[in-house]
Image (cartoon, rainbow over the protein chains, first blue to last red):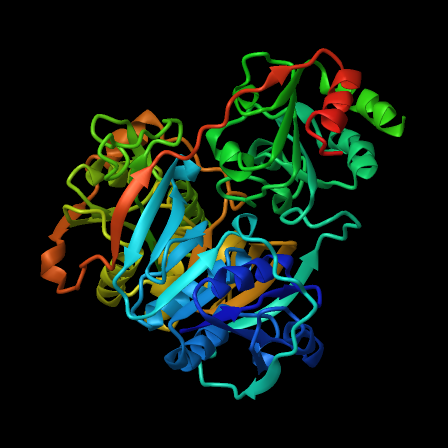
Length: 308
Length: 249
């Protein structure tokens, strides 16, 4: 059996989450990948360990991974594959359900575990339950959680690259512009340490109190939905049911009460630290280490301690 | 221009879901149900577009049990003009929902369908994209801003590393992300008014759509519980524990 993985990219780089999708696909059989973009991306894809063939969609209409042309391309290629897989990120979640509908397949999103070629485990109700589902469709279309599968090594492979021709699709959508947050910090979904702030941060300005700590730990910065809703930080930092799902070695939550929607995005972290004024905050029920106190006092103390 | 907004009745977002003892699903009997929060955002956006003059009518539709009427009344109290209930017993999968919606789109002829990006029960995040695929329409998913100008809709989309702008030919599909707007609360007079707005009920069987599920639920289980750890007294103690006990820094 062979699986086709849609490798998504951003800012000219293959997303790390896509490498986790490659690992997931290796559980299903031989792995081919589809890259929509320039030759450098196809070259990078051919180096990924475990990939046996790269399908390179070089036509300009695919460069921005718009769902309408890309889903049509996936459908045209689907005949050779038993599984179509992508990381459960913005691109995979945009493109794969559309392709699935065109294939008359019910997609299986956010897979965290592969039982066999038909059977998958996925969280429902913000991770408060884990459903094991078996698909009766001839082809399976799934997105996988990067936090649940190790990234395939970006080097070590030597797959052949095959250029695929463009296919017709409805001409109904146009890319206009993109703004990527310019951050020197590690990617939130693949960072080893994540430092997150919630409503307790108080304001956009005060949210930056976490910066020195993130710097000291080489950590990514995250946020709860409450902090995003309050306008402290942009949405791409959101960790939770409707944001990013992370499972770092260390997750530090500051001024986050621990709503179930937030816990859904971080409770699989190896070590969780919570700092909150409220000793009854639900976040303490999942934290390995907690400090009841004012985060604006604790954070600078932590930075000082880490220097020692 | 007509806007169609599908809404789903789900377990209220404040309720902690309980897995049934027999592992067949999540308990919904006797649990408070509400409109899916992302669908509230979708309704709000459609009503705002009508209030701005960009749309003339907002039609809400729900596919589900009889009690989904309450959800439709809530949407009409927020400002939707009329409602359609497609009556089913089982909770259909997104593929079946998208097929039902396609038949309603063909009947109603909307220029825009605005949906929530995902339902907070099955967390599928698929129906809008699937409907767009079936119709061959453009899709503006995870929208944080929507403008209708000269026969096109301009959408800002939440993506992994920031924001993206796309434009789509009408008719088109939009799925709402949480920053799109803040839904209004329905006022008492509007709740009363909503009771008099038209609500049409159609048995799903009448639509001739194959709604058979493709996925069999083998089991539903509680995730492994995380145990609460310890409270430490100071930053010094915390760093010491992280270094020497958890060995994580």
